[in-house]
Amino acid sequence: MSVKFLLDGDVVEIAPCDPTGTLLEYLRGPLRRTGTKEGCAEGDCGACTVLVGELAGDQVQWRAVNACIAFLPMLHGKALMTVESLARGGALNPLQACMAANGSSQCGFCTPGFVMSLHGRAIGALGSELPVADVIAGNLCRCTGYGPILEAGETVSRLVQDDSGLAQALAGLADDGSGTFEGRQWFAPRSSDALAAILADYPAARIVAGATDVGLWVTKGLRELDTVVFIWDVADLKAVDETPEGVRLGAGVRYAQA
Ligand SMILES: Cc1cc2nc3c(=O)[nH]c(=O)nc-3n(C[C@H](O)[C@H](O)[C@H](O)COP(=O)(O)OP(=O)(O)OC[C@H]3O[C@@H](n4cnc5c(N)ncnc54)[C@H](O)[C@@H]3O)c2cc1C
Ligand code: FES
Ligand code: FES
Image 1: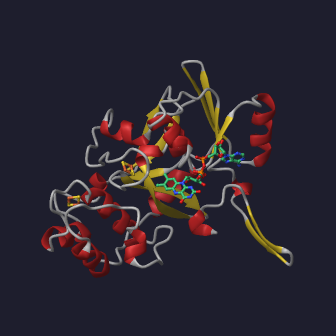
Image 2: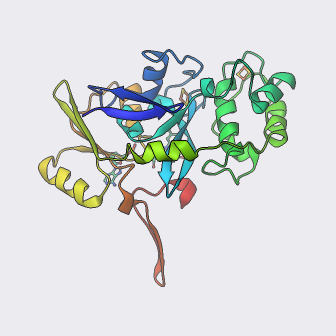
């Protein structure tokens, strides 16, 4: 099977897919979307920030992701927006135009990452209720001193994006992913029963949740992983249950949701 995701509404299909190939490598290589930058390759600087959307009911829930440590199978069944997605017909979107006009960009290397974090906030991505400064806490800039970037985020704080067609398209992509690449297998199950069955068959498989640790084993440690199971999409691991005894967080609950 292949990895399939939507980029600006078009299906991108990768087959076979390297389970530990990073989204950043794929964007800058085969897709030639070089607006997304590599700064640190370890999730620190935010130069590689993109927006990943997934179906939540009949809506698309976006969130900012560091492409440098996101493995390609984590994109299976998702929607992707890069900085190239924003300008239409050669015209910058309002946030980009504001940042260009107010001096938010000097050398420019960090700018696409800031644009994507702030665009995410403006369209209601996960964590967008937070102050601008918190939303860009994962983006580093050596040049500007951050003042104009904060100002741009406050000035263009809401943008309307119609994702209704995208939500329908995503519904058609939702399935359990799996594949083989040069003898290495990967799985992206959607239920804990499917996950349990995979782990029974492959007890030595490496579980990957957010990949903010495992990602660095690959990008910095240059490790090769054999069988990999991605648990991002296991629905019953994403539950937050409040009980009289306390709050129970599933193993797939994200920090921003907890
Ligand atoms: C920029 C940056 C800053 C960081 N700052 C901190 C920090 O301040 N403090 C800190 O503690 N860490 C920090 N980390 C490290 C890392 O983010 C954390 O350890 C994080 O909790 C890892 O979660 P993850 O879901 O991304 O794990 P992954 O990278 O997906 O997995 C990490 C390990 O847990 C295993 N695993 C994952 N899910 C399961 C599961 N359900 N069952 C069994 N095993 C599982 C994996 O096999 C792997 O061994 C940072 C990382 C980055 C990139
Ligand atoms: S390149 Fe620095 S966070 Fe990805
Ligand atoms: S403008 Fe140079 S790093 Fe931000």
